[in-house]
Length: 204
Image (cartoon, rainbow, N blue to C red; front, top):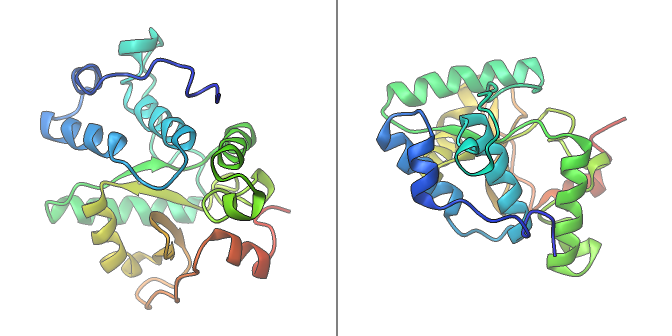
């Protein structure tokens, strides 16, 4: 069992009341964290923990202090700036948009890779959904996962204005700065494994 699966998960109510955000935004965050998707359960829990930690919500069930690190902490500066500009525009349009997972440490990505192997049974299948640390653009600070799904759809439609593009057809949440601002986005890759095999590792 993953060490993340072994931890008691927070309830929707405890997270909703713990976050200091507007009630509607809190409900949206909670709904997105608990929304099922095709990522391994351990990966979803880890991403949820990282996202909630940035909101200070984990203090309600772990006793940890709330630090409220910026969403863009550790990201490549160009990506961070592009996202901040896009986020401002999205909110001006009345669209919720936030980062659910940005910069990850080597250890965090390694745990997600282990969870992927356990879930999918082979490196070939796991790499379609999660990459080992030396191949991950999250570890290099060059990728963000966003939510909620409506916000991701908005970003997929308008992100090209800031060079932000959805990267993989199987991951509606994953965006990178892959285009010149104002120029259309390149075609999406089928999944992360295909790109890694063709383009090489993300890290030196």
